[in-house]
Length: 73
Image 1 (cartoon, rainbow, N blue to C red):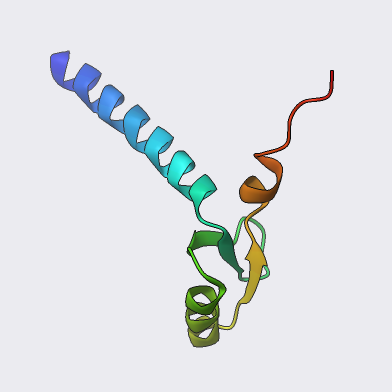
Image 2 (image 1 turned 30 degrees about the vertical axis):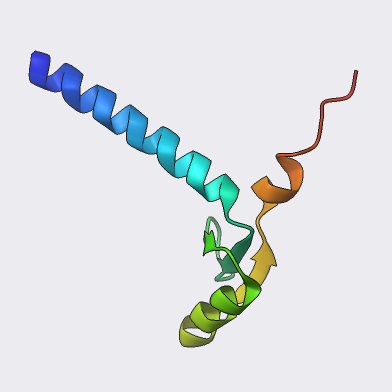
């Protein structure tokens, strides 16, 4: 039981960390399919280098753009 609880805590913290890190990277490679954004690039040059290898297109991370907007009151 303790092992299951520990795995749950570790899994939840990993998901939280990956969501937070995805929001911090400005550039994504879009492969043109559903759920195909790979947001792992700090610079456009890094993104383009990766996209040229696999045939994707670089776009600004939507979380980077819309995550900073304030809610309307």
